[in-house]
Length: 222
Image (cartoon, one colour):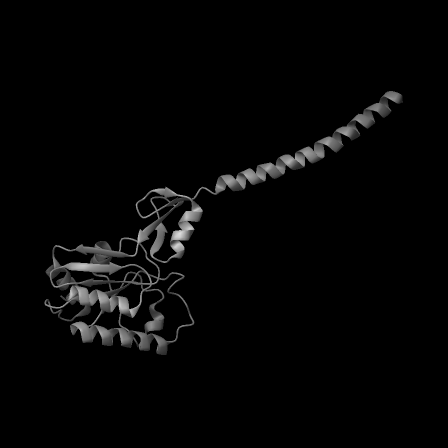
């Protein structure tokens, strides 16, 4: 009986020790799992790896955008404006003319507003058609005043464009040419590109203001 009582006390003591120990191991295991799953890597515009806080600080200035990097767990910063030159503007004109069924003046800048498809930035339901019409009316008025031309509205994916019905006519990107030449990534909201008569261009990625478009046209119209 004495031996049995000792055995019972030993078991009871072991339970008191093992239960907290087991619980602690489980907590550590879960914490380690959470830390291990946070494998996102962050890169600056030069593709150099930076830490998360630096990435967030730079992004908060809104001078750069963030996009998906080379893999699913990579986030990369990119500059919002790009200058370049295409080698065959006449071919681009031909493709656009066929799509919009309208002749393009080769002596004037081409202004393209590009919609990449629905995303959290451009899917707001609070904007009314009246507001859309007013904003784009001002945009087009300024473009016409500077260069005597109109913007061409091009989309990659049509979902989300219903709010423009009766206000703006959007055209499908012919053979994905605009995407391939100017917008290799999905930039939030919409973007624009302005091409000079010589094929030089300024493209801007993500949400933009009317004044930015007008300034780019002034530069490309010289």
